[in-house]
Amino acid sequence: MSERYHRLFSLPDNGYAQGAPVVLAAGALLKDNQTGQILAQLKIRSLSQKPIKAATVSLAPLDTLNKPLGDAISYQYLDLQVLRDGDFGSKTPIPLPDPSTRAFSAAVTEVIFADNTLWTVGNDPWEPLGAPVTLEQALGDKELAKQCQIQYGSGFRYQYQAEKDLWQCACGALNHQDEPRCHKCHLERTSLTSLPLAELKASRDKRLALEQQQREEAQAAAAARAQKTKKLALILVPVLLMALVVGAFLGKSQDTEEPSDAGSAVTAPSGGESAAAEDPTSEIESMLHEVAVPLLQPGDLFFYKVDGNTVELVVAGASSRERPFVADMPEFIEYVSGTLTDAFSDIEVEVSDAGEYASPEQAEDMINRFIAEGFIYLEI
Ligand SMILES: [Zn+2]
Image (cartoon, rainbow, N blue to C red; front, side, top):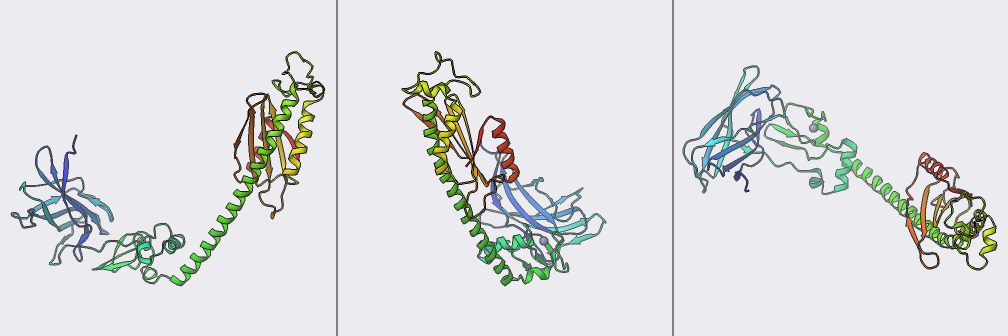
């Protein structure tokens, strides 16, 4: 289904006549595809400190060559309660009589305020105000524009402009010439006309240097974490193999104290009999010590859990050796898990990186969780 209204023409934004209490923020000429009717629609924004209760506009229809098409049409908006910066008109279509109308010009001719005072248009023409220029465009420097927002607030986005009897604030609001501060964000007009550019540039440079340093540190930390994950994966494979060698361990819950049920145990390779007779936990542990100690850093906390044919390993430690490691405040936590999918052939090692920088509280929570989940703890 095609749209009901087809746009034939748009007015330039922000039409204004010197001294007017409103701007013609936008306007459009629409064709109703169901009835063939031509409709004008205006969006009018109040610049007035007094509430507006009525306004009259004059629309001059133009043909497709922009030539006048009959008499101007007058339309009155009634029963308004529009405060400063408020809009009206955009939901009020104004029918134009000539179906060959393809453009129009518009002027607000009269505004009646809530206190029954009146403004009427003079001889000044309705012309579009200059388009707002963003600070980024004006300064030609995205980071300098960002610095202005850091210093003056996120709404500080436009270049100061003075036109006719108005000035446009950095926040985009239009103010009257006799207003020393923006009525919306309360910035002083004089502070906008002379931005302390040298100061802003120095702050920008300082911030960029700091951001660069933080990026480098984050990259170094990520590299260190990747290295840890790799090491954990290296540890995981021999541990899985050990779990296999300690055959009695497989297929049994970890807290089985007496691996005596040889009949149901997975058949161990040669030597399995003696291995099965020993405590599998200590076998795994000594294996972990043997494999893990040379790969990890002194002081790292190492957790492991063997459950059936799945081995999970966690290391918590400092990401950088330049910073002293504090045992209960690890800077990162790495996690890998491996599953022995087929006793003698495939070892599937799934490495999942949970190595976000942990705050001390997060780290403590995670470590407590590992312990609660039955992980066994070793200090390297
Ligand atoms: Zn402002």
